[in-house]
Image 1 (tube, rainbow, N blue to C red):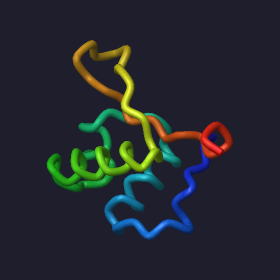
Image 2: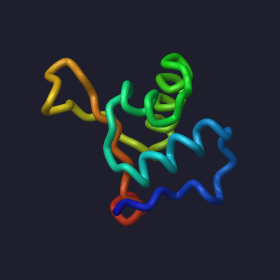
Image 3: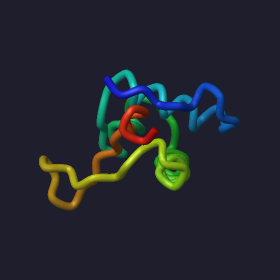
Length: 80
């Protein structure tokens, strides 16, 4: 299971929450993250974008939904 390096990083609580959900559940689509966290779609989209820009997650094509994306936690061993 990937381990996100977020414990020593100063990130907002919503970002930390989504990162932990992804670490626990594995890759999820944005709608699934909304379901799991009960955060709004706009919050999830914004946080996922911030996490991706910071290198904590990657956005990949969802094989189950051609127009969808999966949010995938980045394995700390791969990135460092």
